[in-house]
Amino acid sequence: MSDKMARLKIDGIEEEIVLPVYSGSTGPVVIDIRKLVNEGVFTYDPGFLSTASCESEITYIDGEAGVLLHRGYPIEQLAEKSNFLETSYLLLNGELPSPEEMNDFENSIRYHTMVDESIHQFLLGFPRTAHPMAMLCGVVSALSAFYHDDLDIEKDDHRLLAAHRVIAKMPTLAAMCYKHGIGQPSMYPLNPLGLAENFLRMMFGTPCEEYKASPILANALDTLFLLHADHEQNASTSTVRLASSSGSNPYACIASGIAALWGPAHGGANEAVLDMLGEIGDESRISEFIGRAKDKHDPFRLMGFGHRVYKNYDPRATVIRGICDEVLDELGVGNDPLFRIAKRLEKIALEDDYFIERKLFPNVDFYSGIILKAIGIPTSMFTVIFAMGRTPGWIAHWHEMLSEPYRIGRPRQLYTGKTHRDYPA
Image: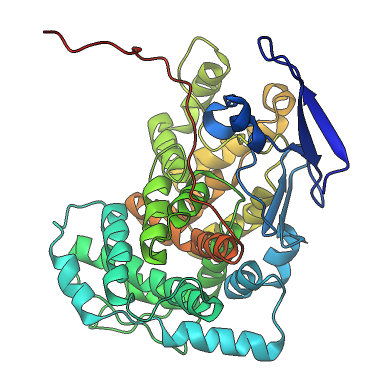
C-alpha cells in the first residue's frame, strides 16, 4: 500500500479527490489515478508522456543519466560479458542462467529454428517487390495458424514454449523474407551455428556454395541484437501489451509489435540515417547541412542524433561506436564516401558546442545503420533486423503481463466532436 497521497481539487467538484502515490524500486513516483473515473474525470496525456500504463520488472531507463538496465544489469556490462541469447533468457526469466539452464535454452532455440514448409508457400503469395516488413508481419501472424491447438496462454510452460518458438523462428523468417524479395531459394538454418552466424548464412548463403560468416561480423550483429532487445514501454512494446490484454494469440501480438515498429518514427530511424547521408552526398557539403540543422526555420534534421528518452549519451551508442569501427576495418570500407561523411558528422557532434549544449549526441540508430550497410544488408531490411533484436523484449513483456492478473486495455479520450443532434426529417 502507498504511504503517500496526492490531493486533487477540481473546480465544480465539491470534495477533494485523494489519490495514492507509489514508488517503484527506482525512478519517478507515480500517482494512481484509477479511481478518477468514479468521479467522472479522466486525465489527458497525448502520447502517454506522463502515464505509467503498467507495472514491470524487466527494463529501466533513466534518460537524464543515460542509464539502461535489463533486470538490473547495465546494458554496457551485458554487451561486454553476455550475448543475445543469454540476454534473451535474462529478459524472459528474470535472472541470468546457470550453465545447465543456458545449455537447455540454447538447445530449445536450436530445436525450433525451422518453420513449417507451408510458410514457404505462404511467402510465394507476396510480390517480390513487397517490403520485407510487410512480409514479416504477415508470416509471423500466420504462425498463429500453426500453433494454436496446444497453446493455453494461462499456463506458464505454454507461454515459455511460445516464447522460445518465436525467438528461434524470427531469424529464419526474416531471412526468408529477404530471399523471396531477391528471387533466391531460402536457406535452412544450421543448428550447430550461433544465432547471428546462422542468420548471416541464411541471408547471404546459397545452395551453390557454402557461406562462412566472419566472426567479427557475427559478433557485431549479435551485439546489435542485444542492444535492441528491450527498451521499456516504447510504442511497439506497448502495442504488444495492449494486444495481449485481449487474450490474443502471442504470434498475433508480436505481429502487432512489428506493425508498430515499422513506422519511420520508431524502427525506421537507422534507415533515415542512411537516407540523410545520401542526401548530403559529399564531405564538402557537411558544413551546409550542419548550418541547416542549426537553423530553426529549416525543416532539415540530422537523423541519428539525440533521443526522445535519453537527454545524455545513449548508453547503447557508447557500445556500438567501437563495434562500428571494427566492422569498417574488417571490411575495408572506411574510405567509402558515405562512411567518411558519417565519421565527419560524428566528430562534429562530439565537439560542436551547439550539439553538446543540446545533448544531440550520436545515438544507436546512427551507428547501427552504418554497420548494417557495411555488412551488406539493404536498407529495406534494417527494420526487420530491429524486429529480430526486439523480439525477446516483446515476448518477455507478453509473458510478464499474462503472469499476473490483468485487464483489457481501454484508453479514454477527450471528445471534441458534435454533441447530440437529430437526424433531419
